[in-house]
Image (cartoon, rainbow, N blue to C red):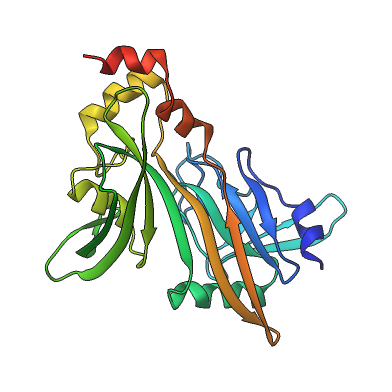
Length: 264
């Protein structure tokens, strides 16, 4: 089955869209904030639909569905984004392309660029190095600084200030390692919590912001993913970019309602 045919039959949830594909089978999907990359093993009754409205096989890491004509389809995941994070997710139309992409992620040869709105102003260009450790808290996973943790590295660069004088900035984050919640923890540790972060952020600031803007999301977006794979004796370069969500522009550019609250 051709990749293009599978894409035409993707049961994508609202707010999610295919932004790029290659006939080798690689597919890039722009995931909406609040959508899970795949459903939880035990979803709650009020859980929002995941990225695709289809069955998900946890062991095989693929979605499967049938169209109206009775044809069967599968979409394999190569990586994931946390539910609150928007942006590029890499998937594949066949298991061979998925395996090659997973290997690239495992070997840390994939380059990912995130954009985040942070409280305060990050440095013009910095390299962040921390020891991080993950632990379980009930049914959730949390990450914290720990001397016994593993080394986490992120390159951070200032992009622009907001125009509302709300003491916010847009930052570019390029993680070299890939720990759970790595960017959120590293930003918070340095006093630049990501706006809307309900786990590691500035809770009182977030509450004040939500009241002013009526926007409730984590302002972290995977803007670009680049990878190289070897498939069938061919070397393939694949790069996909997801546009900045409108909610980011609403916060960064002049908004009189937000300004009224922060001009104190």
